[in-house]
Length: 311
Length: 289
View (spheres, each protein chain N blue to C red):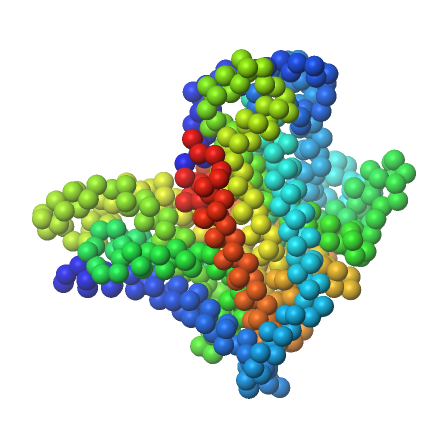
């Protein structure tokens, strides 16, 4: 894996330093590189650029975090008044109690979707990967390639038959329809298989001789040693499930009680009664789990999303 | 029970999931692409290749053109913007860790949350962007209602969403670079732009390539950014391939499953081409340590 941040600590002086020859100091640091000395002028320029970029890229985040606590008349102003000093929970209260697009049931649906998809992926991927790595079965390699091949099928190419299929099954009005197509996927099988392959085969044979069953071996010996991969898959599938939009949009279009937070935010936006502060409060609520994951689970996210692709 | 029995039992859940909801629908899509739709919105009689003929019309040509423009903006911007942040952040000045965490926050947004926040950002009655433009006496554009700007706005939202994750990947790659090579290049007098283009970029090319491929896929599959922000408008100016699939099959009770499936197969073809590109040709060319 090229993706590793381990070097950070090992080499504190490791950003060596050609004092940029004929370059005027104070020039936009976007031209500077990792191999640049942090001379004072350069450092200042770097900070200036970072602050400018932060204002451009992070204002929407600031708006999301603060906007829901501001009253409508203060917010709907050019520029939006985020720092009046008057903060209230009214918008959050309204967002959670309004009857137009109820957010609490949508929150429950989102938790259901993300949680079940996560669990489904963990179970199906671990079982399949175990069979592919430890069991002597025919067609092991072709089956692995089959799983791998499904990764490159863009979901939007098969979304129409899936929607019709779920309808034919008579599940169109049921919550289970929100998660059914996503309980297994090739990427999870691939990720867990790569992790299991690190496990010494001799240990597996020894355990077999000692009469240790497959399920017990998987559960109490293999899984604890591949916890990083498990966490990466869990975080990855939870985030995918939570942020999913196209599928819940289709499912909930015929039955509003199947709204997830993602589709609820869209319906709220389409309703003229929704003031920006109410929308921002709803968005902030929607972002709680994903913001926490992005802030505290970064290394799992990078590992999950890049596994296999960069190695 | 032997290995075979256990193997079947262990593989069954994953095979059933992937088989029923990925592989079977793939063939079903090919079948549906040859069908019309009856009055109650169900697939019906064989229409031959009529839906495929629809792929060779000027309308679909425009859809592909929009998809191309959208993808190009997202991929170029979504790589360059995080790069201009990752490189200065790699200098490890005080506080860069905080900056890096802050810059990854857009990654937490979904298609619908990002789109609605940016709709508020460009809402004429409160837009902070229009306010800044007003300060320098530039009349603000119609961000979502003029065709050119609508394309830019939807692409920008997608670019913004991908910038957080791409920054993480590129930062990790820069941090993992072989310091000896950089030291050697320094002694040889390489500096500034030259060092970046000749040494740093080639060294992180696997990550750079990964970022370009994943961003291309994200852009190709973007639905919410278009559907929430412009709903394909104005005058179909932001009608991209995936939006077109959604619109034909699901919007306003259209139920045009056949044409939607035919266009889905085009998307599949592009996806396979990208995968071949990723695992085949280019993987061998990028620099590996």
